[in-house]
Length: 345
Figure 1 (cartoon, one colour):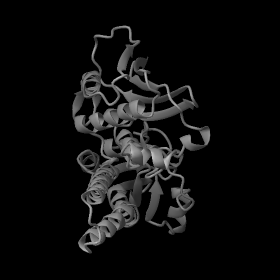
Figure 2: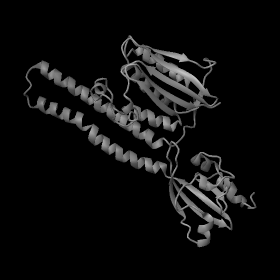
Figure 3: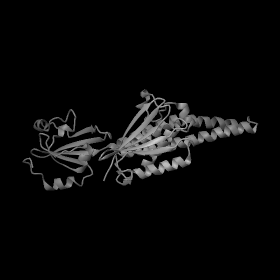
Figure 4: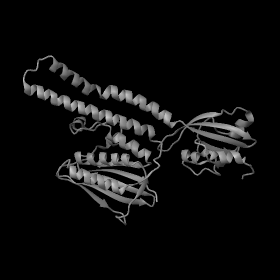
């Protein structure tokens, strides 16, 4: 192939490696690549030039570097896709006009370090307020200064609410940490998408967050009875739709319905939109909605039990599932959270 004989042992070995491997000539023409390399770069690689995919200043010309004998054998590289994989690239000359380029995935280590930093910052900042409140009320009760039962019960009720808030915060921080660490690992199980949504809608309607608000399905596909399948984690997909649907009800006007619209975008995509009528979200805040602890209305969010982490968790679960989230809102009219999933046969 391309006047280069690839040693058969190298070509066979490349397919069982957990790391990405590309073989190319000194001009950068890709002669062979394994599945992992194609997954990392998300491209059809063979017979294309390596410089189309790796934009590193020092890694410009294998031929020139080889002739000058100054090839730096290791580079750090971040992919430009939604995952932003962190890769270490190692280059080795195998024989004349044949180079092996090895891709080591350091994304897990990078994510773990980020999760550690964020976890410490979040715990120290967000848990301080409810903890300070609890300590204050406990000291007041222990001092014996509260004589009447009504005041004591009032304090105990506030302490109960603050302790539950702390518990929700810890659960959400742990959940977010887990999904952030694993977001670069594609789920390897096939699950139904439509059935879980229907079960969640039934459950929320029966629970009655607002008795006058219901969730309705508007299935616009040619065959609404047909199921759709995705590569996914059923618990995480449930978490996404429970979060979005409960938010749609809580932040919607009274006596209005939430619409779940299902559309077949293309043969390989399906879009699920969650639409409510409510106060909506100003344009200036939409890009920040999935930031951890960001709240448009902090007082209202805390009043209805929000931790400020729900949409951040949704964002990272959807990244893991290679799904796209878009948010559109017309204040005092309609808000639409749309998710486009890649589907499989």
